[in-house]
Length: 410
Ligand code: PLP
Image (cartoon, rainbow, N blue to C red; front, top):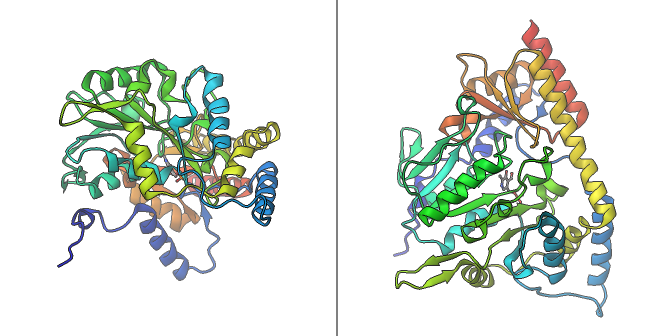
């Protein structure tokens, strides 16, 4: 008799954004005239850069010609893209990462979710709280999270990040095995200083833990002192895997491409006492379960690193960050407390006193028809906050802020 992976039954019924979508759909059905502005889900709205489009067209033409047609590509990604990544994302920062430590993928969600495949089921988990839900949900599926008791998983160590500690997580007071860090952070939009990141690397090395570092938003960092990669910290190559995504960097949410860095220096002791290289294990996993990212998409990603590609991608990031500034200023003006939005495209907004995350989400939806994301959906410490994204169209951000000001000044 076939059975299922019972861990899936432990998951809360819906993925957060499916929950929100349901509520929004119900509101829209009851109020078809409402002009909704969606500042909830973190999806981009600007079109792809012209350099990317040009590369896509060229690659499509190659596929139409027997001489240049490509079938299966390398599971790890084409050399042209892996080399471009090394030369552009790491070498200029003085980071020594080699092309065979880069694994091109179809976006960071897959690899952040799948990386647990090569890690023991009995590892304990540590997350900053609130956090991108995939880290926890994938560990629930992988049997590492324990049970959901009073709003939290009982085998997960949560490191709260709130206004009270300036969104700087304290290190756990006990050893944990797998540590998920996401900086710039989704959902709070805050960053970690070099000194703070050094503490995590030191903790991981001391406890033989692995840091799973999600750098999906590094392109949004504006302050020069903030690290873009965990490998800027000495010794991180011995304890950290890093995830990158072109989704927010270059508008690839629909195109799908990113990459994972698995340094060869990162080894873990096996049950029989040898050192296993995670790079080799991940390579083996990918060769078995993944057949590579589409050639045309990898050519599109390569184009981001061309001089015109870099300039165009930067213009789009600047557009979103101007949205962030407009929202920060407007929200501050009406007396709300805002965080993030300086080195990240997310604004983390404190809800008015006594109003919970979901209640404020409902108020924004019904009063001014703006869709946000309730902070508590990202973890217990997100209660009392909501997240707004800067990925909307400029006119929508301005209109949303105008409605908010009008409503709150009533
Ligand atoms: N990591 C974080 C922190 C994210 O916020 C997201 C998407 O919102 C992802 C990863 C997934 O990105 P991708 O589109 O590359 O799968």
